[in-house]
Length: 201
Image 1 (cartoon, rainbow, N blue to C red):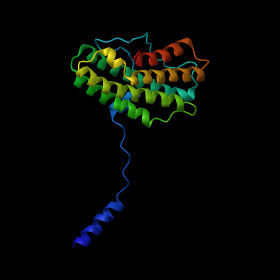
Image 2 (image 1 turned 90 degrees about the vertical axis):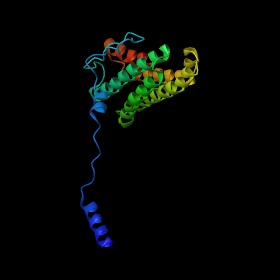
Image 3 (image 1 turned 180 degrees about the horizontal axis):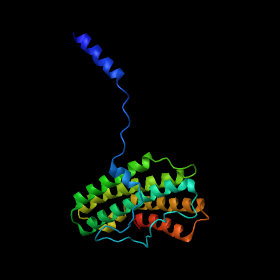
Image 4 (image 1 turned 135 degrees about the horizontal axis):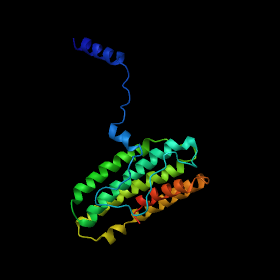
């Protein structure tokens, strides 16, 4: 009987259609859609003159536009998450909960970047962006321990991951500038300030 039951189970397993990959949840899908409003979270402000990404991205080839929109939507959301956790670090309030929210939010964003296939030629830019976000996530994880131990924000900003992330964002900017020499000033300024706003310095 056990053999027969096992055989039946095996038959059902083999006869069943292959499992389809699970679609990303609505939150993850929304991360890749550039929002109507770029307002910073309440009680925070961007460190530079951030302007919305132009919808038609003038000066960027059509083949790159969907990728640029998705990537900069994620960069914007990573920046907003950074602003909130920085406020908690600076105020020494709600540290652990704020850090947990930041890590949860940016883990989804990092996963979206990981799954993204950039257009040919944009792979180095994509690698810079992914690594910058990874370094910032490590920076805040290490910074949490310092703040809980009573260290000041100057000690937190001295962590090497902060400067390393900044260098990767600067590199990402250089790659974008070299790739799109014909973009409009509006597109150029917005692209630059998205990377600037994510920076820690």
